[in-house]
Length: 461
Ligand code: ATP
Image (cartoon, rainbow, N blue to C red; front, side):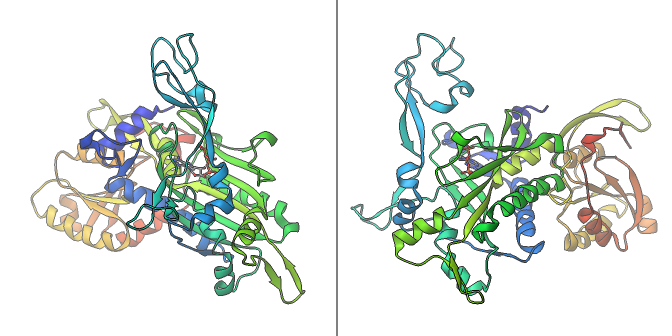
């Protein structure tokens, strides 16, 4: 199993993800995404949108504001109850999440975890609200307090009436949203697994009350399938139903999609049956009627809600962890074993789909390669690289997970063909330049499953 350190170091080395404000020493577990990180996370979010909007016809999109009326958070229960239990250690001066003590490092040796030795002196746990507070307008006065949203879901509930009116949908239907959320986590960490600023992909599915259980089960299956179709190994993925004492006050059932991260099985996505809690709360606090009236049957009811809530950063981390591989390849001709690191990402998720590499920087090869690059770019995210030995350039593309390396050699110039090297099998194939862009686009979209399930020895020419 890959360590988190290896993932962090690859992400830094190849420009996926850096600590934020690094030249000032970083700040509070926040991260910046570089070029390949942006491409990868964008692909993750696009796949989510595709599953919500393109593959079905009962969901519409929304993009609500991060700053909302403070009453939203009063009605939702976040103001009173969005808290984690916090303890201080009087000895080392650090603060810890009381329900995570066994997983957290202690501030001082020889104790491994807070509270483990007699030197540790922990306070009683007290509730700490995770919402970031700010003020709206230039004057800090009462009534100007606002909060950065800690989840995207409430923006959906408060727009229920707008969407119902304009989308011409009736339950069962869903509203989907992707966007930033903020939580002042007591102990963030494990790279982008838990940060204070992160992106969520949430969908609220409104259903007739009698159909809630059936739709809850539907979404459990759908969401698990989504990760598997994008290449996550099924034996590293599981559904875990919450115990009765874990359930939020509003939820009658919640299951987490969990992934086997280097830190152990952890939540990737939560799927909850929220009942009619949210719409009823907002109806009560706003005075607006948030219900559905079925003109055909004359029936009026408050829909129940099934919510699959995923994290774009956490999903990106899971895809990176699952894709990471190291292997020894036998170089054709020399037979010498060479180590390579490769990201076996689903081609649809890979930041770059094709790299165009002229074998040498002369004999018309760079010119032809640039022409091929221009054509490929119209169909897929492509990259041109003519710097350094070909083996080094392959390794670089392996590390960012590029599924196809297109090599231009002397034969290419004479016969208008290229070799296409496939990332996982290392098989090289000669293909005509004509139609190459369409062929690669087709291969990127083809069904794919990770070769990590059935390892085969590889050779690289
Ligand atoms: P946890 O128990 O890990 O704190 P949660 O149950 O509070 O998570 P939800 O409120 O259900 O999380 O949020 C839905 C999803 O949003 C999570 O499954 C996760 O993918 C993502 N998420 C939540 N908090 C964070 C965070 N601090 N950093 C990154 N992603 C997060």
